[in-house]
Length: 448
Image (cartoon, rainbow, N blue to C red; front, side, top):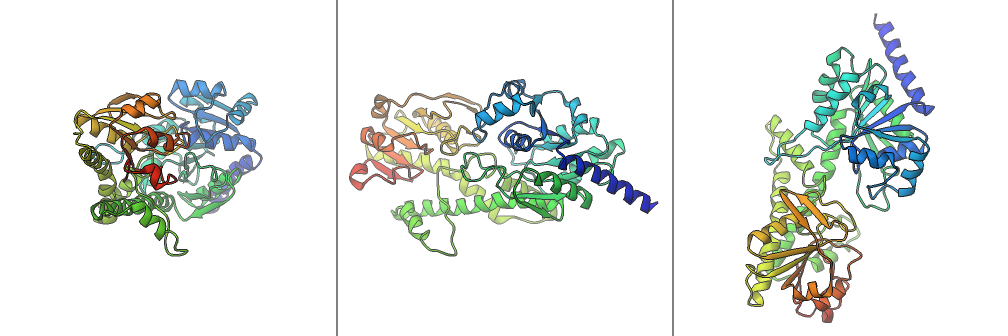
């Protein structure tokens, strides 16, 4: 009986691998956002037929018209792939049954108590389970805590009687997307892959090898999940250290940027991380708390993670406090002063404002009674955390009329020298004015 089962398992896996190697395999990508659409494009570029699944009819329509909405995707590539019939999109989850490989790229947010919200992952997994058939590979790319793939997804998928590693294959391969990065893309970023079982790992590695240059197999899906949350926890902790040094330098009357730039000249034993008004994006503010939450199950306290979160979340309040001090030097109160924020995106030259600290700074300033406006050509309209904000044009009059300009995001299109020349006072939280001379900054510019 065992020998027959082993042959059957091997045959099923080999059949799927051959479909992958011959490009006959049909690929489904669930979630067409910053992770899903670039991944779909890379797979289509090497000859796979890709079906994108998304609940947003707007996104689905844009993809089917070849209209790009993700900065890391080239407009002409998406347009050409759609025209060739290699990429399509749909809201119809019943078509999941036709896919040989299903890659899940849906959000994994935290609730207001910093508890993981896996509702999107569970919902998609239930959709897949209703249409699951033998010979499919299911791979989760969404960031999550260790155990999600095996402990949450597998039982749902196996409810119909099919078994992972035998009838279908289950893996976790965490996304490593860095929006706006011109050097590293989906194709040339090393890809970690962990399987629910050896057969699943074998099939998943074969699949990912077809469009990604270097694959890094690990022993299990749990290991792959922990890899991802560790990567972003590493960044969160080191950014928190830089932020804490910034807080100390503020007390000591030192320029934190000067201190850090000098420290980073050491050719070994150090890595550059910089302070700012807080952390934003879809990873660093969220992912460490997945690990922190999971650790409690093992009666383990992740002290570094908790402390880093506290420091990073404190930074918007520090910016507002420093803004009040700068205005006080000019004999002005924050209440009633006109404050202009330059930048709402969480990162320069990007249209992504998810978890952006600039939004928190805006909200805190407004609650303190300031007359707040913002300019951001990348994100002129912001809707998050109950706020619905519209930006303004960056005219000379707008800069002159502001009692204080706060640089919250550094975009390359902004002429910060011109802004400093017109402004009354500038609070620079991003070192955007670093190339200006001391004479140009004079007494106008205050650094974080």
